[in-house]
Amino acid sequence: MCLVQYLQEVNVYLKNVDKKYQERPFILKVANLIDQDPNSNYLISAPTGYGKTALTFSHSLYQLRHGFKLLAVYPLRTLIENQLGKLSSFLGSYNLEGSVSARFMGNPSSPYLIHPITLTTLDTLSLTCLGISPEDMGNVFRDTSDSGVNSSLGHYMFSWASVYTSSMILDEVHLLYDSAKSLSFLWFLLEISRNFGNRVTLMSATIPSTFSKLLTSNTNFKMKYVEFKPEDDQQFYNSRKQKDYEIETLPLKDDKKFEVIMSKLRESNFHKALIIFNTVSEAVQFYNMLGGRNKVLIHSRFTSEDRKAKSQLVEKISEEKSEDKWVIVGTQAVEAGLDMSSDLLITDLAPANSLVQRFGRFLRGGEEKGRAVVWYDEDLIQDKSKYKVYDWDLSKATLDFLERNWKLNLHVDHQAMLDSVYAREPEVDYGLVRKAVAVVTDIVSPTTDAAKILIQLNGSLVRDGAIFIAKVEDNEVPVGYSYLKKNCVKVIQSDGNEGCPSSERQAVMMSLRGAKFVVKGQYDKERGLV
Image (cartoon, rainbow, N blue to C red; front, side):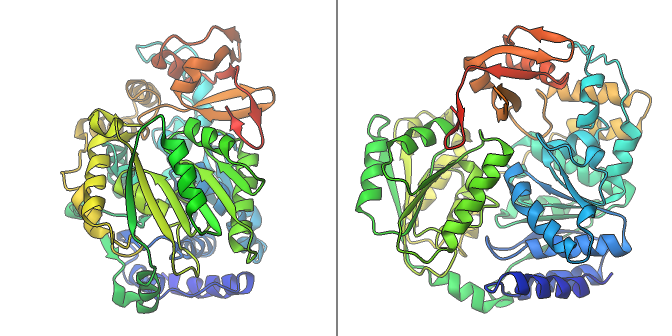
């Protein structure tokens, strides 16, 4: 393999388009290791903002010249929207821009993941892995009942061929660690990829030791763990180590939280403030309280086009050297893929993995000093059931660690926190793994078996909650069931309209048959669907 050669070409290109771009010694080290042993799989840990994208570019060029296909897989479609234009421009410099496309909810440009280079989501990949590509869902599940009986096999062998003849890069793979369901899917993917011989590369800035040990302990996976060390790039490490801030943890009562957060914002000296909430409703409510015009709101309930425009605006703001103050309000959607830097971070509590990603958007550029506040709902943290959308145990363990280590530099010294918070043994549902593997290896009734698994898991192999397409006038926006339950007006299906679902399971069944849900909410480009 000659990945190093293509990395050098990528570096030349990126220097030409971005004067601030720097070659990263650790990325070169990884490329050399892959060249030396191209038949192994790799788990790569590098800091936020370090430039792991260069590896994806290098792999893309290699596959187009010497391989067959590459799937670049992301947990969030915001990451795809950010990367697709950049990768297209890079390949366009070789007149290869037509070789890359994307497939995710709202973007069917690469059906069955067929393009030589396809950027896709974990959701879409998981469905295609089982032979029920989104293109076939409406037919496969047209007459599906709770028994899992379906009316069409779909193009299941074509779906398998498209996936299992491809090399894969899974970015931000730490998000698969947070639940037994998603971790079991990763286990299935590695097992089946071992059988077919396609290589899988996993990347993240936040890899707990329990995660790396779990994957490398299975010798069948041939997984090599490559972790960034200070000596791999002493200059980068020192620049991040010099970031000057302390982490303030702040308990807030529900009826006072917006008022206190606003006071923190007003009393702080900043140029770019990033304020992150764990729910869309809280983000919108706080955004509406802000005065002035220098503000941007980013969350998951925007159309793809509007969210892409907002990401581009935020990145442009981050690059500006003016003295104007800007406030960016967001949710988990800003954790990855948003290339921005702030000097004031006010964030709701989240498990360690997510929190480190949020700090990756703080003092990311040349800023040396800043202020960081991690607040939490005082009543919810005592509830011991769930902390908003997150696991309570992980959230509480993160808070406890921060309160003991408030001088912690989360840019480079976060491993101790990760290992403390994620100390418990990872959960893999090996029964589910066996069922998924059997779908591909026992082809007597593959699509029916896959349908049964998907129904059993409430419509997703990787998410704890299903995502549905909400329609407001001509806008289509992804929403969760809690929003759907409150706001559904009617259901549009190919064979006519239906009443709204009475349960999440029924909503999943409708969605699998291709339904779209008309909702009574309002949509505008500034605030999204509210």
